[in-house]
Amino acid sequence: MAMSSIHDVRYKNIIIGLIRTRESLNITQVQLALTLKKPQSYVAKVENFDRRIDLIELLDWLDALNIQSGSYFLLLQQLKELANH
Image (tube, rainbow, N blue to C red; front, side, top):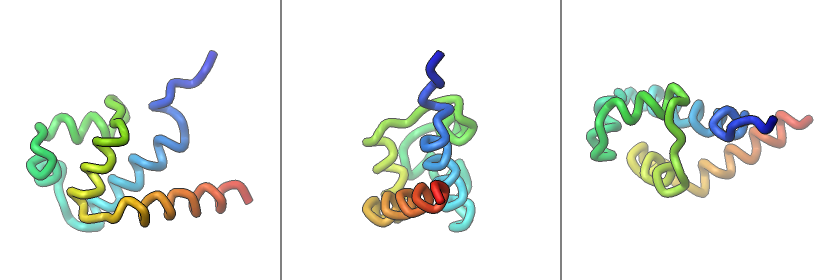
């Protein structure tokens, strides 16, 4: 049986990175939700792995957290390479 993509370690690392970034910027789920024009429950469901976000939504999150998408994806690639060594 194939693992659900929402439980894929690569997807989890993306969301964990978003959570850590949001928290390091002292942005609450409510504040992020307001910026995204979504309910707070949307942010909570994504962060609790109850809801998957697509690429467009990920780019919106990065924009809301003022993160350049290229930098974020480069960091994820570096983390993947470190994990493989």
